[in-house]
Image (cartoon, rainbow, N blue to C red; front, side, top):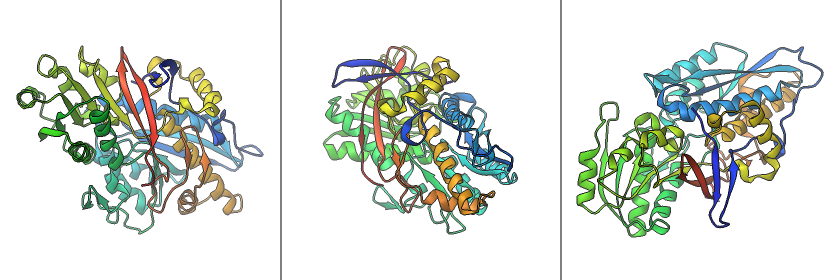
Length: 423
């Protein structure tokens, strides 16, 4: 499941049709980058995303972006370029072990020179060591946990995961273009306090790497602003279906809203439906809840629903229009576009660019996976639909962006985006 976006630029008071965008270098229309036919052989770029179950509302539109980037490119420097998709869900939810198995399967195919994904940070923590041992280039559009790339998070040393421990080769093979959680949680906390004028909130998480991390940073920033977190609780969402005791406790302590550190796959917005009649106030999620599944799970209580996305809205990039139009011509359903469709498109384009440079470095021949990783690390000032990308030494984007969304009617509406500085 996926979705179309309404862009509501509140400062201008205008609403325009939107759909996070696409584009090759320069953000323009996609074009084949091959030369002299495709007689040299085949290169495969894989993706690993949650494309079934509740997470499919994020995973499928993200996969669409990868597929479109690769298929619209077609070939690269004489090699046929193809895409192969993998699903990392088990019993309807993203699963780290399944993700690691998928990466191992990728490594068994010598034609696969890189992958886009995964979507979820706990899946990334399981996949990176496997990919690292096989020198597989990995570029994620949406992983946000700081400890996947950095030594500290929230002022504390990273232990789960530890970026050094998940790279056994000592060489980084993992890169991302999303803003890390040290920005995402605080971004919503600032918006809650400054714009929504909330002073007392309840916070819960799914107790996963991503969910707990972003809930912790939201809480820290909200308190720093002068607000109160009246209830804070972590849940095992595999067995929890009733949040009413938590919500009732929060109401008794004056909560004006709730922040959920979770994804749709871990029931992020089911408590929002249960909040009706208990707390009349805003419900806030990180990017794992900014999808059509969250709106569905919220039932009739979606009018005061807000969320963050750890990247830019490509629709605001005028250079991306031709690519957006080409994507919409191929993917025509309302839900074919999601919050990370064009972030994923850009990740695929980043990999294609790196593979092209690796081919050149190898005298026009099929490059090794190590050569692709080396080229990927040197990505610099690559202009795409959601930004201009350069990676720092950790594999993070040097100029990440955050966006804020709000549900209007039956769709998520864009409110604003802003740069959040380096990682």
